[in-house]
Length: 230
Image (cartoon, rainbow, N blue to C red; front, side, top):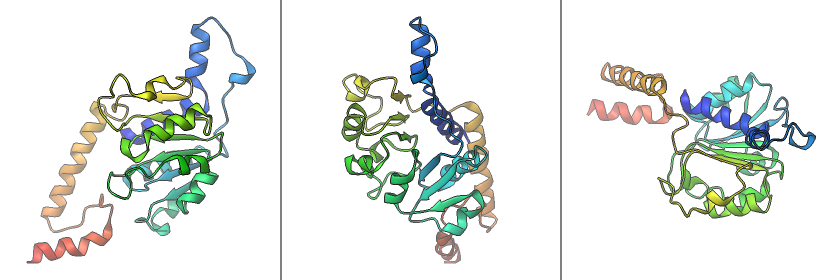
């Protein structure tokens, strides 16, 4: 899945300080001890929103030898146990994770769910990645947290307002600590084709009166069946 792959790529870029090292090299410098990245092996990744994309991220992180925590009030522990995900509270996830990644839909529960209070619960060495919905993170609070080094860095592919206005304060944050991409990082012809095939297969399965394998909320199945019976 494109978004899951892109999320891992952003994590790697943050942990390995790729933007800083490239900028340093282009400026004529060479490797410096303080610019060395961090080993991801043994680190803790926190996934907020453990649905289809979140689970695909977990599948990929498991092979990296990372501890994986998850927070999602609609996903049970047994659903993700085989992926090596331990479901915890949001507070514990923020406190323990070396990188936090958001994979949520935008609704009343998730809008602004990460603000200054949540950012301050994170480690000062931790990163946050958002490839889901921009308004899930309060941008002004994230700008402050990065400028004051409350957290180590962030990567964003989604924003409150898209396209991002020229005067958005995120543009002024130290570019070595903040990766910005224009809501495109998970989109490519391959992922679009895969998504279209998945949607078509799910529609055909539903029309046949069966439950598609791609269903995220099994609790909705009975209500869906009732609609078809009536």
